[in-house]
Amino acid sequence: MSSATSWATKTFGAVASQLAETIPACLMEAHDRARHGHEGVHTQTLEAYGHGLHAAQYEALAAGLTPFEGATSRRLQGRKVMIIGSNAVYPIRYAKKDVPVTEARLRKAAGFRADLIRRHGPQPMQQAFDLGLDELNEEHVHPDVALLPHDLRLIIVAYACSMERGVMRIEWGAAELRREDRYLIWHHHEPLHPRATPRAA
Image 1 (tube, helix red, strand yellow):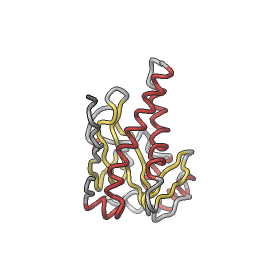
Image 2 (spheres, one colour):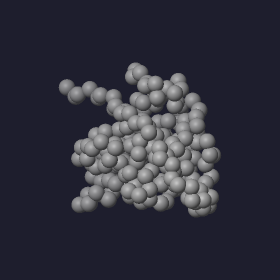
Image 3 (cartoon, one colour):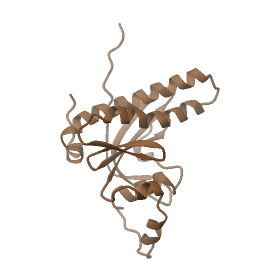
Image 4 (cartoon, one colour):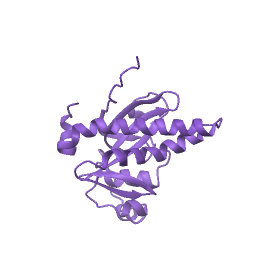
């Protein structure tokens, strides 16, 4: 049984250690499902893998985290996002190769993911000039994000994964979104390590 870090324990309480083991297992299962899907359709491109992984990551996390005490879920953009206590556990595949999580960035500076991070991530380290735009931004927040309680905290599970190499790196933590270049600016992040599987004899 792995021991939880002080950040994880402060964030998730008594279930932190079990979460730290379950989340990597869920993402590895999602990869396996997506890979099998790709192999089943025999396409030359990786569309089946990419789309399959996107859907499977939410489904695997929902199945793995539902038994946890205090676990609930919300349907956001047609996907079940798990909430543990007051923390939404949100997966993002940020790379197809093994690069540091500090290289994670979103494809778009607007839309559901961007609004979710801005509204429920940590307060920006550098406050923007107050130009009276807060109210304007709030009016244009994605409708699914607008339905979430204001005190919900977003915990991002960022991972690097490819069909050939599988899940290479997983980290979780809290990050803000830098609008100008769409990079995630981590206030805290730490690795999650998949449990080693015994080699076949």
